[in-house]
Length: 73
Image (cartoon, rainbow, N blue to C red; front, side, top):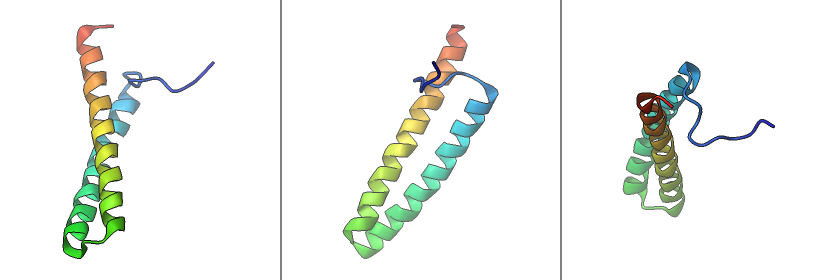
């Protein structure tokens, strides 16, 4: 039965998508971080926190895929 695997399978497509996600989420994090600092409102801080968490999750997935590839499993 197909489902969500963690860490993602180490394929070229998954590595590419994780790299794109890390870059995209990092840009969103920087944008909303600057906006939150400038405005001081709660909503930009909330979006910044969620975007930071998404960036870290995508980064960890990329690192886990890389370590799995190097170990040869």
